[in-house]
Image (cartoon, rainbow, N blue to C red; front, side):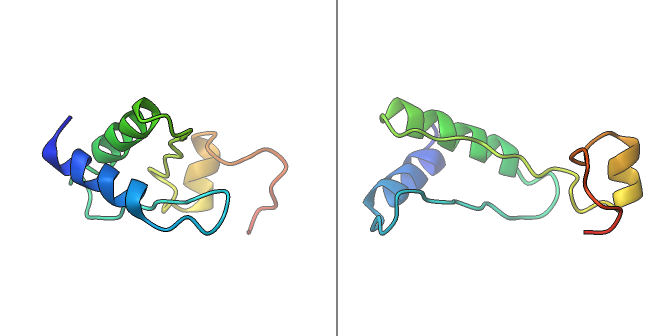
Length: 81
């Protein structure tokens, strides 16, 4: 495990837990390693016994027509949402 993931894992595990679920968002410029970091954090959380799920958002900044052509939009969604 990288030092970066280890530090982030500790920060998440030590943060106050006010609700049943936590959402952790990772943001940054394109190709900066967000997806790699997120996957590593999920693996580390799972190894620590914390149920976790990665929800990738790659590409969802694209126009609806592009998302539709790539079959990335949920079925039954209105044209504009």
